[in-house]
Length: 33
Image (cartoon, rainbow, N blue to C red; front, side, top):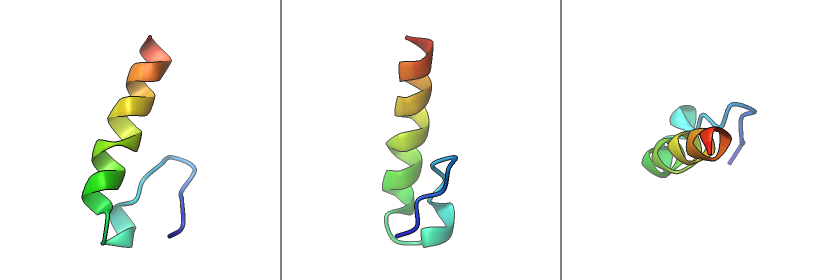
């Protein structure tokens, strides 16, 4: 699986849900924390 710099795995198909749910929100929360 190719990991995009922005953490966007939507193009991967499989694991797209995991990619969107885990990296995006989690990384944003860590940045704000």
